[in-house]
Length: 426
Image (tube, rainbow, N blue to C red):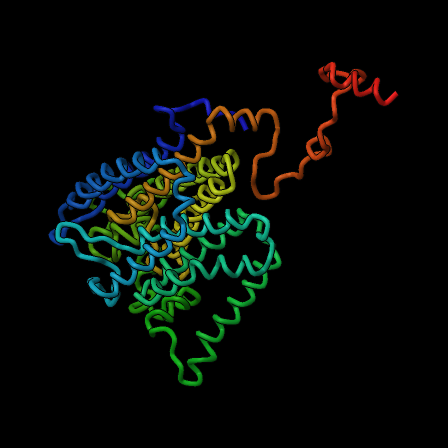
């Protein structure tokens, strides 16, 4: 793959401009579509998100300046820090809507499970990069899942099923880019089906409740969205109504009734995609999804040009995080997936999620900068394999021992010592 031609201050221009476009579009939607209870536009969300965006930009720049391999040395500490943050949340976190997800610091509230995504990525990438030769073994597959299984369970118990499943998808994405066997993925899929049947049907039948009632209703309600229109399916029905009312070009200000009359819940966070689509229609939704496709494609480009296995796994993990969050959020808004509270990356209102995503993009920028070093570009141009998953074995010429130079060896230096040794043998 060739060097990227379009760059801004040494950074991939398409990646930077696409991310900035999503943030700017988010601020614009928050400023033009969110209303106060009295009916007027509420620009406070837009102003705060603008401040969050500026801070996030500095976070991305700071992370991008750190060499990628620096994080590889500290992956066990990243796992420990993730667990410490989640334990701290259990001790001093604030309960909101029945979930303990936030640590209140006065002017701002932080969500440790969001920052944990970056730490979890550093952890799983470091572990798998250190086990390149055993990557296709079942033991490595299970250990990789187990590493993120601990923070995943802790996040699930907040309870926050949406973020917990994102941790799971991150582990699966890292294993995929590392080259794990498809058989192991298939066996895991079968195990998930069995556990789901046990948790949702078998155990409740014998009196053992693993999930809260509202969690079960959210997980299964999308299968019959009209069954509880005023209860568990209310959010999905209102979101689908908002999307449908947007039609091709959207509804003008004052006519977007779902948001402006308060029917759509959480219009600035979990259901901001429905807010955006009602206001700007199918064309607005297509523009936003197109920006996400372009952003993810540039991250996948970083996977292809990464200089080493760890960098490749970092970029692959970021691509998986962005893809699964967009897929889950849009899927739950349009009613084909359960409502699990996963925000839309860099588009849902909130500082913790935005800062996390900007840090992830900073890691991708660092991978791309590393890939543009003269040594790595030379290796790509000459076709010489770099150390990594699936690297070719050394060729016969590379494995063969060096030949002793003689006078008859073409291209080898002639020395007087070799001539004298031949005369003594004769």
